[in-house]
Image (cartoon, rainbow, N blue to C red; front, side, top):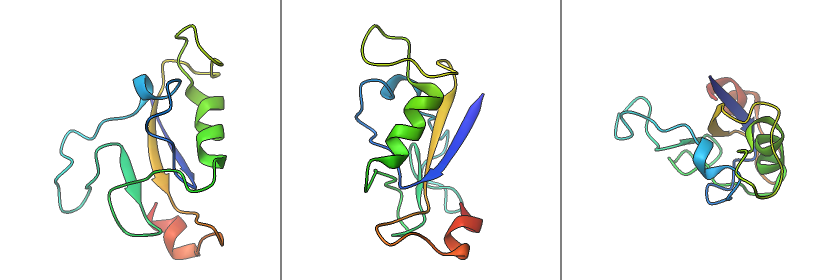
Amino acid sequence: MVVAVVDEGIDLSHPDLQANLWTNPNPNSATCSGLHGYDFVDDDPDPSDSGGHGTHVAGTIAAAANGQGVVGVAPEARIMALRALGYFGGTNYMLVRA
């Protein structure tokens, strides 16, 4: 199961999340670029977290049962990182695109 986290992004190097990141089968596609998701705030393929909240939400959903940190409610789910919120929030356009 793939769960899209539409938030401030996700810390792609977090040890509890790395194993459960969704991987785009065609990250160089013109219509769906990005290896693990997309940043609709800066309009680029890097959905890295800008404030920590998206990483927290992703961990609650799907932190891996890897013997470290916490375990999410769906530890085998894949997380698609969609950054649609920035420091000042987001627009309806960013959220709808995500």
